View 1 (tube, rainbow, N blue to C red):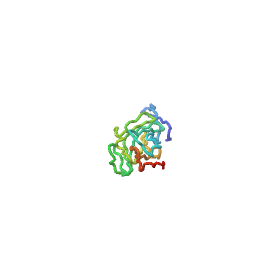
View 2 (view 1 turned 30 degrees about the vertical axis):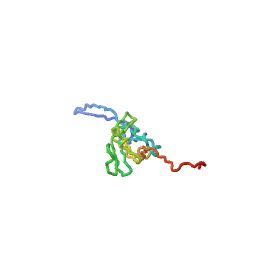
View 3 (view 1 turned 90 degrees about the vertical axis):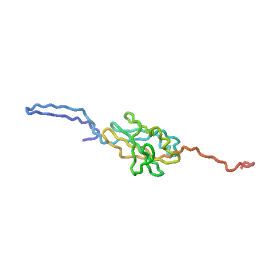
View 4 (view 1 turned 135 degrees about the vertical axis):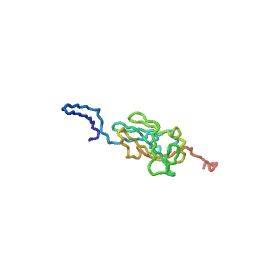
Amino acid sequence: WQEGKVYVVHEIVTDKAGNFSDVAHSGFTFDITAPTATVTLPVLASTSGVKSLTSITGSTQDNYLAQHVQIAIQRQLDGLWFDGLNFTVNQVAPNYLSVTTESASPLGWTYTAGGALDTKLVNNRQFLLVVRSSDVASNMQTQINVGVSSFSFIMDKAAPTVSVTAAPSENGS
């Protein structure tokens, strides 16, 4: 078997008299390469602070046909993983959840936590985001590349505070 090759299965039936029938079935492509999910929002450049995040979006690349995307979000403060409603899952491995929407291949996807994502990502906290994808051949992404399928970001919803500690003097200093 070779990756990417198309194979056709033939069903050959022979009776006792030597008559035979050769029925070719539709072909299939041998696929053992996993797809790669990519996060497009938030962008990696926003890791210094994200003001609002109502959805996380991305795409998936596969040699043939990507099928599903899963997402995991960890609150870095205590290491708890998001369960779809709150940060309650205490485990080492990511707690993967299905994304909210998926579109045709190349697969585009969105995660909104039922429309409540921004309210679940509280201010002044750092979060780890991990995504993975599978394809129609059941190949699951196992290589999670930082900056592509995984990165950390900080929620920064509060405006900076400004205070004046002393009024300027008459001579301008």
